[in-house]
Image (cartoon, rainbow, N blue to C red):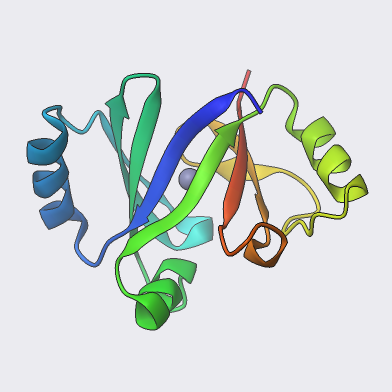
Length: 133
Ligand code: ZN
């Protein structure tokens, strides 16, 4: 893992959260993007070498809707930047980590992503992400 690429935060209302985090971080959101396949609307802030990703559910079956229903708003996942996502997935699977995806999929912000089940990592949903070339 190269660095923490971003921290994902589940929010009920993206527009309101963007205003809050613009104030909090002292920087403007640089991108909003809907990822229909995941049922989310996202907004990104750059903070030093890492990012904050705000996530709002775009439908009631979205994983974010389910997360908020269960736990309320808050930190949803931590994403680590990797050089070769396929290789990282194979290595982690070999070490016994349970992957939620068999193959990398398209995520927001020009990334290939895959997730590790929180049961494998002390309750934290871990995202691997690799910049698309
Ligand atoms: Zn993410």
